[in-house]
Every structure is written in structure tokens, then in C-alpha cells.
Image (cartoon, rainbow, N blue to C red; front, top):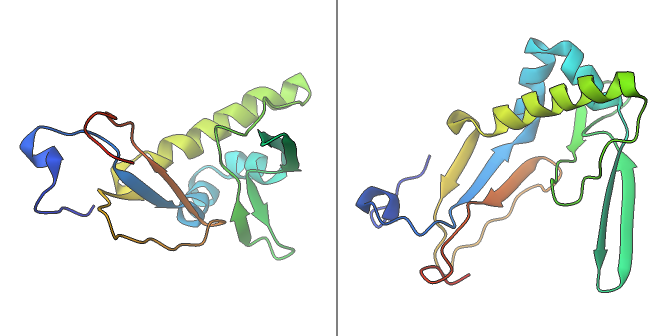
Amino acid sequence: MVQQANNPKLSGDDPGGRSFFADSFKIASWLEENEPAAYHVLTSTPVRFSIKNEGQQYSAVWPILCTNASGDITEVHYNNRTMKPLQAPTHVVTPFYHAYKLFSDKLQEPSASLEFNMVPGDLVAFNNRRVLHGRTAFDASKVDR
């Protein structure tokens, strides 16, 4: 976790909008070692992701955890805004959402991510197929985004 001298969390007046980044490959490896059945479900269950933008519909189907022929993780697809409900036989649905929750819960552990406030002039570059990113909710009257 990065702490800055002007960190509003330390002053008790947190306007929100903190950026966070997590290494999804590390979390996938943890899942493979500790919850192999859940890992298998997330590497083998096809999921539809879809979004409409400026009149265009974009859609793709792939597992949450993609692997190559050697079984190595190559990319992670995790986006709660574009992921559609799972379209699968009933016996697949419960194990899938259980595995998805395990992965999601691990992402939210403080030790799994880096969280900080970005300031004007900051630039962050990262591998978008490996590093998951987001931000916390914010008070628009206190944060200019």
C-alpha cells in the first residue's frame, strides 16, 4: 500500500476516488494451489462479456482465466460492468459463482492490491490482461475526475 503525505485517509476527510491495481495472475496462482476445483471452473467455463458503446455492440466469450497449451495463465477477463449472467446448465452455475466469488474476495484483500490517490500529472502503464484496476467511489463535490 502506498502512503502519501497528503493522504486524505490519514486526515479523516477521505473524498474517495483512490485507484487500485491487483496482479490477477498471482491471485489465479493462489486459486490453483488452494482451490483447484474453483481454478478449473474459472479456466473452463465460457462467459459472455458485452457492451454497447456509441451505437456499436461489442461482445466476446471466454473463460475468466485463460490459459495456453502448457496450462499457464495468459490473460484474465474480469469486468462486472460487461460480464453477462452465466448461460450454462444448472449444475454448472453454482460452482461457477462459488469460484468467481473466491476470486473476487481474494482481489479485495488488502495484501492483494496496491491502492493510492493519483494526482494531476500521474501516469500509470500496465498490462491490461494481467493487472486488474479500478477506483473507489468518490464524492464528486470534492474530487475532480
